[in-house]
Image (tube, rainbow, N blue to C red):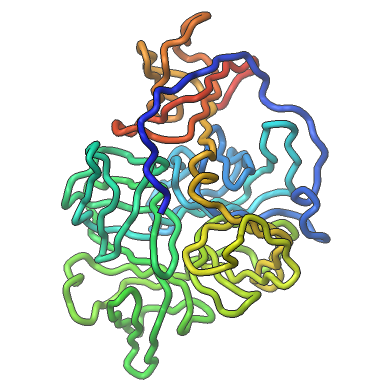
Length: 389
């Protein structure tokens, strides 16, 4: 689990910048060959369009939906920490500190757990370190984004990185009401004759009106939805069963970031429900090798539904803690040491050289959230050109 960062006063730099330099269009920095397009899955780490796995995707014309079939869910509902799968255009390589860019065609958002938060634990500072949903322990840290403060019994939707033995939340969304619960994990047993399967220590039963995803079986990673009233039954009737990954069968550029959920062989494992073929991959920062629960970023190409990896990079606690969160947009509700961008409150050390104006275009960077669910800014830049609203 990523260790909780200690409170540090944020030294903030403010400057003037443009919106990114020109670059050449490539197939994901040389990854993959043939065909067009890109695929990436992982948590949203930046807003102003969205940033996922080092790619800033323009979502203006994208078809956006969520796994829970929420009516009217669209681009304005995309939030920090949400887990997404993006299918988009070829990527243009960034320059300097600017990320690679692309245009999203499809954005699919998926929470892993929905239900009441129970057994909340806190550290000596009062910050939440874990809670349970559906009996599954959810770990949280300084990079977990919350929509609101959390108390025991609150219904929540949890987004993050799942593995067989652990789960790290990247976003916790408090809900007004949750009539349908959800659990995500690996199928460990299946009996087609009794129409039952086991996952996460519970037994589920499905009727003839429930369709199983293609290729369903022991070892499949799935999201299971159930009615809240039946959660205590010994065999839980399901509303739906969906595959945990819904990416394209083929794509010349693919990037995924997550926890290794299962290791099938020395060269084959699962991340975010996607099977990875590591036969020809270059590994870095993985001194302990590939094992369940290790956090990795995989880059390669999708072939027949399998991500054929070119590079696999491990991410330890220090590397994850150092990763920046980005916000690009117009400042509002400007106060002495806070303002709001893209619906997220930013905490910053009061600046010299001129205050931020209401509706001013800014770029904000930080590495953690404080106990008030505010992004602690380490850098604030004014932008010369207009930003999206």
